[in-house]
Image 1 (spheres, rainbow, N blue to C red):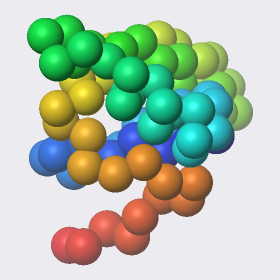
Image 2 (cartoon, rainbow, N blue to C red):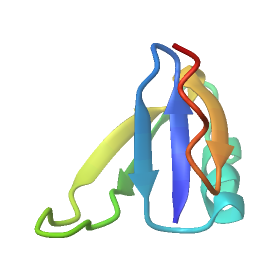
Image 3 (cartoon, rainbow, N blue to C red):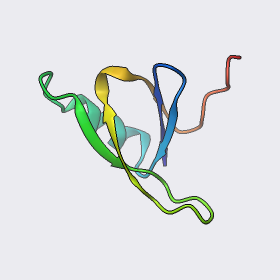
Length: 69
């Protein structure tokens, strides 16, 4: 599991490791920065696909970062 942190404070928990997630984002061509990930299922919430714009990613971590507010 990895956490993708986006500008604006959004955090998405996705299946896959931090390294796998970073590799998928770094392999994107500049003309098409969109990539699909699947969120990690949690409790009764099923996994769902999400589209991430690589230009808005601020960090990829194994644990969520603390909220600065």
